[in-house]
Image 1 (tube, rainbow, N blue to C red):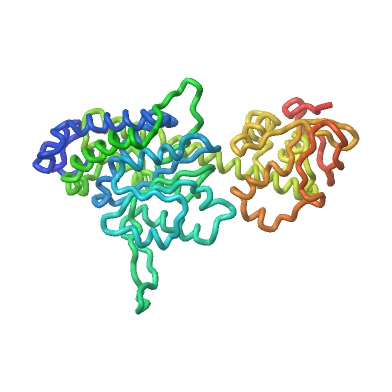
Image 2: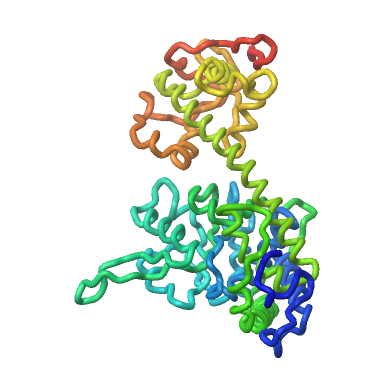
Length: 424
């Protein structure tokens, strides 16, 4: 580890006078162990590394004034009911000076953040950054981006004399929502991708009147331990296993781990490497998936926006685009299975569909793509006309068949058995 000689080595705890009167030397590690167990008591996180990261993030809020960067904690899930709000409930009882909000204006946050900033806890971020968000969402996104680094104030005309006034933006923030957050925010975040609990995964019921005293006691002990160590933390330059913005984001967490000593320095760095690598893979996959959404939008548009396209026809059109990567996707090119897997995270799945002439096949209905297009390709949906039939919901396989899709699409992919088989 590379930092000033006045800072203790890894695993040594805090041995100088700044730690006197609070947690004894080495007890910082035990305190973090208690906090980790308390958080894990009420929420199920994606991994043990994620639980480590949340524990360190909570502790880091208590030394915000000593930090150069304020990492965001992005709590995301594909659907509701995964426990995002419960994570914020636990954070509310443990972080420094929590400010919980579901829907607030940038002006309020501008005027709330000061020299000793609160910890922002923003729930239902999908209503703020979704396709129907107001113009304030871009201002709030800019504020959250700027607040990741110290000395990035927002200037506003303020007061009766209308003077240009700088408003601080630096504050740690946890942001929870369904679906992906803006890339510029996740790029500055420790990312938690929350999923529904499995049947065997149990947590204790969270009731504020029972849980808050335990968690508040931990918050008080964190403040007592870390408060006298702010100047030490401000001088630390820990050795990081990652670089660039990822290092900026994770440095406060690693500083906490190094202050605690014991197993925490190694555990923090292992979590940093595992979670940043996972997000790098997610970014690559997301780019591929968004490209797929755009290409499917173009295929529907060229076919005059039919109510549905068969999986077979959709795959064939995708792999015949010479400028797209789909002919080389996988070992033998994109097939129906690959297509279903890539679209699954958008909650888009094929279903039996009866086309004109009585032909029945697995198909994707256009209306199932509308939400994903609006969220991930908003520039496409702004100018896209509704289909001529009004975008009626897809009919089930029984009953009178809908009109045949317009346009001319190939009925089978090249390459023979590598593609999906026609459904008769």
